[in-house]
Amino acid sequence: MAVPEPGGLRRFLALTLVASVLGGLSGQACAQSGQVADGEALYQEHCATCHGANGKGGIGLPLHLEDFLRIADRDYLVRTMKHGRPGRVMPSFQHILTDEERQRIAAFIESWQQGPEMELPGVGEGDAQRGAKLFQERCASCHGFKGQGGSQPQEAPGHLAGDRKVVPPALNNSGFLASASDAFIKATLMHGRTGTPMDPYGNGAKLSERQLDDLVAYIRSWEKGVDPLAKPVIEVRSDLPPDELIPLLKMAINSHNFVFIRKQTLYEDLPGKAPEHPVHILHFCSFSLLDKALKTDERVGTFLPCQITVYREGGQTVMSAINPKALSPLFHKPELELYCTLVSERYLRIMQEANF
Amino acid sequence: MALRAVLGVVVLLAAAPVAAGPANPNFLERTIEGEHVGRTLNQLQTAIADEGFTFMRIQNVDKGLAGNGFERPPYKIVFFGNRQQFERAREIDPRVTPYLPLKITVYADGNGDTHLSVVDPAVVGRMFNPGLKDQFEAWSEALTRILEQTVREVRAGTWSQPN
Image 1 (cartoon, rainbow over the protein chains, first blue to last red):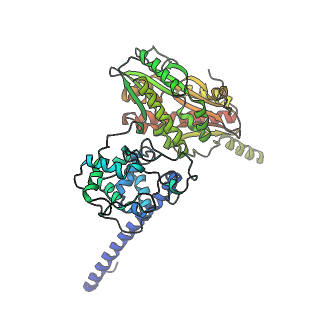
Image 2: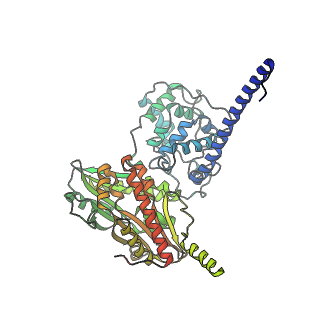
Image 3: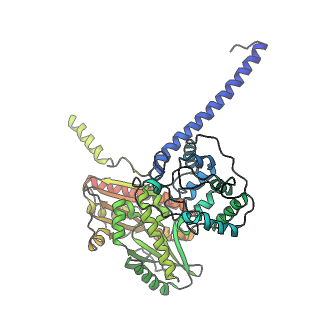
C-alpha cells in the first residue's frame, strides 16, 4: 500500500474520516430501514387483521393518525404490545413476540409519521377529585363513567364502517395505564385526535392547564395493578374446603348456562397412590359456544374441555382455570378473541359466585 | 433399475410428513391425507407410551356436540401424562395445574383429512416460572416425536394397536 505524502496524509485522513462517518450514517440508515422492513412483516402478521394493513383501523383503533404518532413514543408502543388491553380486544403480545420484535413493529408504525415529534407537555400535580367531576362532564359520555371505554365491536374485521371504526378506548384499563405516561395522556387531552371523535381540549380552548392536570390525576388514580384476565390462569382462592366449594361451583357452572359433565381427579388415571389432597377437575361445556368457536378455528380444542381445577395450597382452596383470553393471541385470529374473552369472564364469574 | 428408482421416490414421499411444517409457529400440527381418525387414535396411544407417558382417556367432543344438535366430523381429545413430571411441575409453579394433563387434539376437517394439533408447550411455558422452562421444552420435544411417529406409522400403514 502506498503511503501518502504529509499534505496528502491530512487529506487522506480527512477523507477517511468523512467516509467512515458517512459509512456509519448509511449503516445506521440501513439498519433502521431493515428494522422497519422487518417490522412491517411482523405488523402484517400480528397487527394488520385488527388495525388494518395500512394502520387505518378496523376492529382495532387506527394507528396511522398523525396526532397519535407525534406523541406516541417508542415506549408507549412497545408497552402497549407487551401489556395489551386486558379484557378488551387488544391482546397481550408479551409471550408471542420478543422485545426485539415489538421494537421492530414500533419502528414500522413510527415510519408512518410525517411531521416532527411533538414536545410533550409538563404535568403538574393535579387534584383527582376535581378531575373526577370534570371527567363526568367532559369525557364520560364517550369513555364511560368509570373510564371503561366504549362498547367493543362484535363484528369481524372488515365489517365496520364510519365512526364505529373508533371505539373510545378504556382509560381505566391496566394495560393502558401501564403504557401511557402522564405527559402522553395530557398531550392527548390537549391536542385530541384529528380524524376521530376525540376533540382537543388544550391551549385554553376548553380546559385550563390546571384542569388538564386534574384530569390526568384522576385517570392515573385508576391504576390498580394487573387485570386478572391478563394472566395465564384465572384463579380465585377460598377459605372453604373443596368438598363444600365443589357443589357451589357446580351450581354456579349451571347458572352460567354451561352443562356440568363430570368431576375427576388429576392423578386417578395415572399409576401411584392417591394423594392426600387430590386435585379435582370439574368438566363442563357450552355446546353452542363450543360449536361457534370450533367453526372459527378447529385448533381451539387446545382449551378444551372447559374445566375448573380445585386444589389445596397454603391452607386455602384454589379454583383455577386456563385463561383462554391470555392464550387467544396464539391463534392469530381476532374473531376468536371475542369468544375467548367471553369464556374467560364467565370462568371468573363462576369462581367468584361459588366463593360468594 | 428404473423401477427401483421409482420405488425409492415413492418410499421417500411416503416417509415425508404431509404438512411441510406448522403454519402457525405457536402450535405443533400435522396433517394426514384422508380420514384416519380411528387409526390415528390407536397409533397415538402407542406413541404416547413409547415416550414414557401414560395414556389416560379420549374425550369424544364430536359426540357431545351431536347429542346437543351440533353435527360435525370426528373431533377427539387424547389425554395423557406422567405423574412424576406433573408433581415436580406443580411444586415449582402450582399455577400450571389447570394445564394438566397433557393433551393432543385429533380431528377430521370438512375435506376428510385428519389433523393432529396441540399448542406448543414451549410457548405456553414462557408464561410460567422460568424453573419450568426445561420441563415445557422437554414436553414440546416429546410431543413433536409423538406426532411424527403417529403420522409416519399411519401413513405407512404400519400402525399398531396400543398394548
